[in-house]
Amino acid sequence: MASNELDPASSPLALFGAELRRIRSAQNLTLEQLAERIMFSPSLVGAIERATRRPGRDFVERCEEELGLSGELIRLWPLISKESSPKWFRSWTRIEQEARTLRTWEPLLVPGLLQTPGYARAVLSGEPGVSMERVEEMLEARLQRQILFQRQTPPMFQALIDESVLHRPIGGAEVMRQQLEHLLKQMAHPRITIQVVPLAVGSTTGLLGGFVIAQLGGAHDAVYLETANNGQVTDRMDDVDAVSLRYDAIRAWAHPLHVSENVIREMLVKYENR
Image (tube, rainbow, N blue to C red):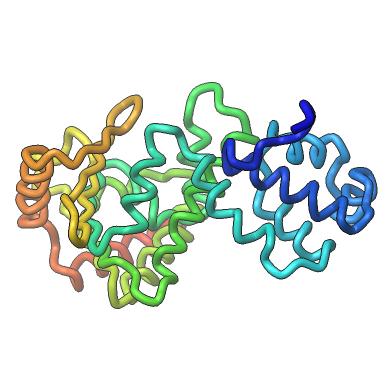
């Protein structure tokens, strides 16, 4: 293998770069010609072919269209977008995709699988020193995870959120209005439930941090625990049992579904009037 050639087996990004170069060369296009067709810079196309830059979904879709492809590149997108996630989180994305049921508790933010692009972008932008390019990469990865709800048989998703989540104006009033409208729309999904834990409860066992419990078919269940730095993923039985008990304790305080929906609608009206 020449020194300037990629090993497609070395990473999903390398596989994409090698495939893009192969297709471009087969159509007798120079790097500059392809860049002109898809309206990206030649330097970016070259960096993506060398696997030193990660393409956005728009880049992949434009390549598919301009090269007359039938999914040869877009089929690689899930691999690339998962790679956009932090290394410590990638094992959880695999678990998430295999889960039959996901039960989550969030005391601070709307769960990632229920976030709108505007809300997620505002959350991700809050990381100290993060570049906008990196924010967009992480946003693409987060939105890609949400495709699991479009599967023929998506997992059951049971979300508990603290009422304070509805009051925290992440991204401003318009972003929150769109986010709350999205929550109400998702509540109509037959496999998604959202319950609000009222502020009046005061202290609960879940105030120290959010978590997700994944119930897997034919394997140990797993949990994801949020921390101030990197999250923790574990399938240790003692940890899973302890977190499951915590979830049940929090759910006992939650509003019923119809009351939770009314609480969200009341907050939506407040954001509409701001």
